[in-house]
Image (tube, rainbow, N blue to C red):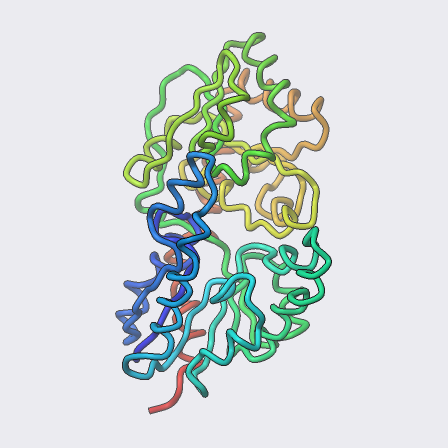
Length: 354
């Protein structure tokens, strides 16, 4: 069964690695031969981390290459699309380039629709505001990163499946740590904005307790925010697990806005798999991943963040208890082993009969 898979970014993007590439072995075992095509190449992600945007000159070639991938070669049995095929092009054009009669499975792990519905330019809102509604009405199935996304997508497509963004818990696992406390965050330049409101409190905690703050993947966006006690670490696929294993506490602050409410809580899952206690904003799916006083704490105000972090810094036994329970939840509910069979079954259910 031939499947053409399309992502926006290459494997340097967490969405590509954890929403698509991790499932390829399970799909191959089930008889699905997946051919993966990123829209933008390796240089794009490196530019984002360096604080630069995509080169506009590269986009026409990328779109033309994707059009050829859709229209040339043997006819696929399935299309697997992360979000959309052609950002900022109308749904009608996108659908015209798809091979007719081939089922499409979409994957959503963010509130993609808000990029058009809330765009600052009225023309974009008018032309593309309902792009995703049009695409989703013709979908054979959609995997949704959380129930909030499923609720939105369910208005257009009845065949939806909540698939959290998960990790392979045989690799993401607890490790021995230094005794010095470390508050850790992993993300990207685009999500660093959620850390900014908390930075003064974290700097004060460092001065008070000596705790260090370690941020992985923030890129050039975080350079202006440096303070004594903040370590900015370059992300690498080869080292990301080992870097998270250096944390004592994992945090996920979120600004309470529409796009952030659609996030899938992946940071928390990474931390929990490594046996870390977590502290997070009670925004979106975070309220179901974090179980207060069981695997971590929820914090809204700066005072709640400081109180919760101070409590964990001072109580290693509490950290160990929260971390052990978080690890158990991650293995049971947020592991690749728990989700791969569900994804395979969705593919089987929409694949054409032979």
